[in-house]
Amino acid sequence: MSQFLLSTDAIFNNGEFDPRYTCDLDNSSPEIRWEGEPAGTQAFALIVDDVGRSLSDAAESGFTHWLIYMISAHLHHLPAGVPPQDALPNGIRQGLNDFKKLGYAGPCPPFGEAPHSYRFRLFALGTAVELPSRLNRAGLLQTIEPYILQSTDFLGRYQRSIRKAG
Image (cartoon, rainbow, N blue to C red; front, top):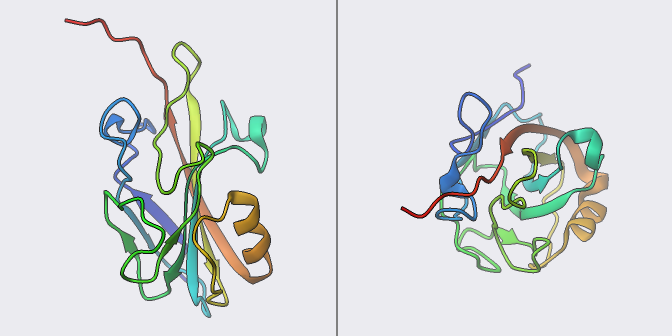
């Protein structure tokens, strides 16, 4: 049995978030890859949350930065720069982040705070559930919960520092 693994170019080897994918630079979605999903997987859903300073700070809730779902079981990759559209040409849907905007919004913790942890969590679903665009986190999780076969996740950290104009 292979291990269900998730990876991204958004997190450096030291666990720090690449600033390209934050509000301080491009604020575009990162490349995401996965492999080793459980047998019977029919679809995937991904949630990216700011879970605060640690997972225990936020438990299962956090500040949601991206909801993307109805990802075909045949796909194992999301390219960088997914546009903020309700539905993508391949049938993928996106939800509303906690900024009340469609699509990805990168890490943007308040200046001067300790580093925040960002969790990328991919769900393997046993059924390809037809879902509308613009779901919020609670609506997505409530709908997919009965179909979750397995999930995998990883964390990255980001801290904003005040840059001097120069």
